[in-house]
Amino acid sequence: MKNIGGNCPAVLILGVLFLSCLSHVRSDASDHRYKEGDPVPLYANKVGPFHNPSETYRYFDLPFCSPDLVKEKKEALGEVLNGDRLVSAPYKLNFREEKDSSVVCKKKLSKDEVVFFRKAVEKDYYFQMYYDDLPIWGFVGKVDKEGKADPGEFKYYLYKHIQFDVLYNKDRVIEISIRMDPHSLVDLTENKEVDAEFMYTVKWKDTDTPFEKRMDKYSMSSSLPHHLEIHWFSIINSCVTVLLLTGFLATILMRVLKNDFIKYGQDEEAADDQEETGWKYIHGDVFRFPKYKSLFSAALGSGSQLFTLTVFIFMLALVGVFYPYNRGALFTALVVIYALTSGIAGYVATSFYCQLEGTNWVRNLLLTGCLFCGPLFLTFCFLNTVAIAYSATAALPFGTIVVIVLIWTLVTSPLLVLGGIAGKNSKAEFQAPCRTTKYPREIPPLPWYRSAIPQMAMAGFLPFSAIYIELYYIFASVWGHRIYTIYSILFIVFIILLIVTAFITVALTYFQLAAEDHEWWWRSFLCGGSTGIFIYAYCLYYYKARSDMSGFMQTSFFFGYMACICYGFFLMLGTVGFRASLLFVRHIYRSIKCE
Image 1 (tube, rainbow, N blue to C red):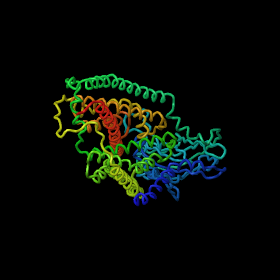
Image 2 (cartoon, helix red, strand yellow):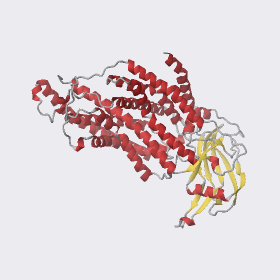
Image 3 (cartoon, rainbow, N blue to C red):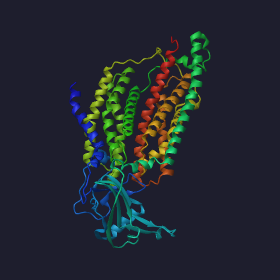
Image 4 (cartoon, rainbow, N blue to C red):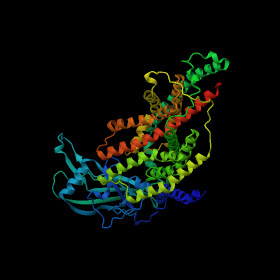
């Protein structure tokens, strides 16, 4: 009890941090009422190649006009994890105060600065700002390729005049957009010093749009009719898959099982066809505990935690927490909920390990804590080093790393241990309907397609086919600039994914037992989780065919973090597959007389 009491303040602080971070942007924006001439906060965030969303740099890493005093905005944990680095912008956009070609600064660009800007224009660099917490984007420059086949003849231009168009409703800012003046350019084609006069224009216009609906502009972009049609086609496609699979199970499995039950119920000697009813002959081995039971229990514990994390994230999404450009809210939620649910991993892993008659529960607990976080930590260390080498905003500051380590030390680890102690003391017994024989029955030779890898390929393909249409939109949002807000459809797809995974794993487990192969524990977990491997294979296709990402840093970030996400899916869906198979196996063996 001392441990629990000692950890309450840490958990309470984390909960307060979580709630404050999630409401951070919305509360800031709701307080913004202005009088004419009042300064409205405008922050420059970051710049980077348009096609490489992870490769972003600080705004003033490019030699723009810099104010005398650059003020950095204090950022929440999730904003830092998201790579946001907000600083005061050089433009002054006071409320309802128009400006026409106001000069920001006059600057002579050196040869090095011209080369720097030219490389940025060549890579389609964009910049992002926030005005009253509304996001705005623009391109740094343009490449003139018209009528030129040879890249050496291309002309490179830097935009030097920005026009801000702002809509307001009484004392509130409602919308902002920017246009780059196509006639006000700086020629960067040659390696020579050039003079640049950076200017901006501000136009204000009244609107009837209420303040509460100012973010709808961003939400609606993913709810356009042609997008919704594709989403609903994805849902219908998935539902058809579920219905076909359910019908397959109902007609094949239940008919065969019913015949088996009738035969076994009438006369034990009637069941002499081993090929058809082979699962009855291994009743003394089917509940023999698996090899590497500590690793198996740890995988179940981690999978259960990730499943709980996913459900909580969906709940927050469905109540509107992750509205567009609520900076860092998703990352904050992931870190905090993962920390708070670590007790689930400890409890499930240790409880199941003790049911499997394991003795070294402390080692099992350590393995559970490292099974997902270990690979994630190693991936993060490598990618953070790459980001530091590139001087990118994706490199986490030392203070943020300290905060994450403290969360791990003060919240995640203690809750993991407490969950493990609770699991050990639960004294739950493994409910096996049949006694296990002393010596295992030899598994007969099986055809190649009944081995683990072909079965995993079969098990992963159907769930993947149910979600692959929706995957494109998620990838385009996470690894691009498309906005995704249709969380209700995504939640339906997630439910379908769980159902298909459970059904296909149960079907393959039955066929495995019918072939008198009693080593179904690991197989059911691997078959359930194999969808994660298919998702990673889709990553290769998306990178090559559907995106324009390039460069070592972006490639490393894409494949590194997607490997961690797909590994998480593997653990979560593997847990779902095993739990469904365990329920099924217990049911069929409880329904017959086992000697």
